Image (cartoon, rainbow, N blue to C red; front, side, top):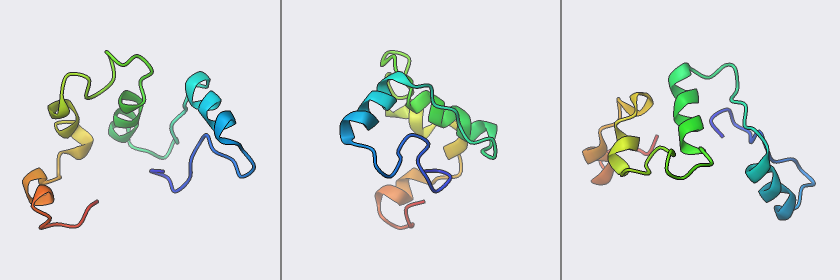
Length: 83
């Protein structure tokens, strides 16, 4: 949804078909995304749960370079709009 649309979902697809695609197809990020954004997405959707971003704790996710400009404390306190 970073690009406004899903790369896996199509209009007439059942939930079972979508689940099958998620589990079995390779995700190819949109070429227009920054390398940092692509890295974040690919690490979040890593099929191996031990290698997935966040497997060792939330700090892995919030310290990712693509999220570097987020003031997490202000976000937690609801002082800023959700990006």
